[in-house]
Length: 181
Length: 260
Image 1 (cartoon, rainbow over the protein chains, first blue to last red):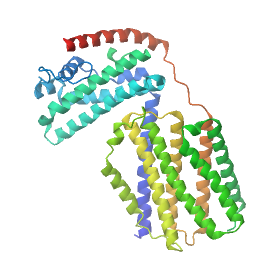
Image 2 (spheres, rainbow over the protein chains, first blue to last red; image 1 turned 135 degrees about the vertical axis):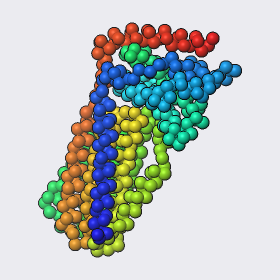
Image 3 (cartoon, rainbow over the protein chains, first blue to last red; image 1 turned 180 degrees about the vertical axis):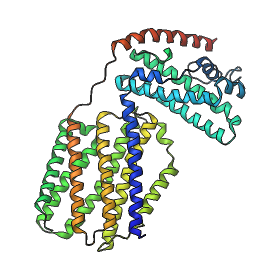
Image 4 (cartoon, rainbow over the protein chains, first blue to last red; image 1 turned 60 degrees about the vertical axis):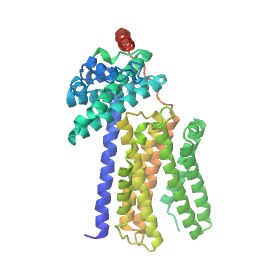
């Protein structure tokens, strides 16, 4: 095969990859923009929020500030893991966080004046996704037990704070709150 | 350097289209939000005038160097527009989002390296070393530009960031044009400039045709105002009051529990 033909094939493959990735994400953005509020509500998975709150409030105050009192971070890693429903439970939180990001995007589109709260919410949801990603990697590498205390609790904190921001956003924009589901 | 009637028609159409777009950018005050994009369109208008004047004086060497120098400036400005667009998408509150800081630079370097290495493979039939450098660098810049726009699209979708109407329109046009350019530059790099004059000319005409479509799209999209915010239906508003009150009670309870 000549060098020019090799180039043509490789460049063709590059163009196909660029086109595929571009179309995939363009469709994803388009679909997200078409989704209505009620459809987003239906996407949420039921979770035991009291358990998530318990893990989060073990490390932070409801205001979001880190607890420094003697009773802070009393929960053992195993307790945290059980309360969050183990890796499946954490995955459910991650799944919900993606929906909550879409909700924030929806509200941001409809009510641009609420952009700052929506952005805070998005940041918490992304933080949660990163933490879950780290947990997933730790599980794959067999070092999950060493990371539960930090990553899993951070997941709960991120989820807790994210819900608070979305609730604030819902109050500002007078739309139904996700916690009705 | 004789141009056919079709070439002159394309040339005139590009000039008029760029001029109309520049008019739209200025009259609708879009230039305030997109200064670099406006500068690029201004450059395109100026380039057409300068190259036309040089061509009338039949200064082939001056035409060649002016054409390629302005092409380099054009490419630099396109990278600037990538920054302009990304600063609007990835800086929603005037601050770069952490998603940008968490970009895997190793991955970026690998992609750029692979794309660069790709240009070392072909040996296109060119008349001079300069021609080879021109076709290969044109391919490389088109590939990098396409990768940048698609990468930006992917990152924004993953990060859940919204594209405001005009930013999305400009980015959409540039992405389509850069991918089309990449396909045409692949053909140019494969065929080379040596002895393939008619093919090169045909590909250039196709590129101008695609650019004209993009400019027409921008003229219409940037003339129109961004769509107004949607209003929430009444039934959603009614649900809201009830649910918000219930949530407020629950959060107040949590707050009291945390403070006690």
